[in-house]
Length: 167
Image (cartoon, rainbow, N blue to C red; front, side):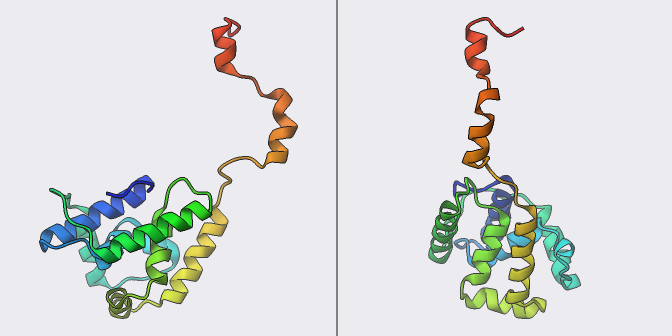
């Protein structure tokens, strides 16, 4: 499983692995697609999935991977893209949303076919996900000017403990 993913995104990799194991083949982009939709709430995005797809996603969510699988070349390439984008954005870990955006921006026939079968449009999903990311973003660190202004109030607890100054 790739490093640099948050807990929910790691669950996507696990679910994708289940699908590849079941068919005894390398992990594919469509496996990741199914894995993503098995961990996110489509309704939260205002997206309605077909009943048969929801049932398959529910079944997938109840299974656990058994062993190791090979990772397909397109998946390896997508992982590199996700990691690079996150690095450029200063993120420590990639999220399920980063994965979904990268998949939607990838021109892959398997993903295009799944979008058609599920009655979804990549452009609409991208807009909704990007809007969700904008509204839910919390700063990972405080801006430098804020840190400078509160510097005089910051105490080093480790240093104080070593000096026996904590009570």
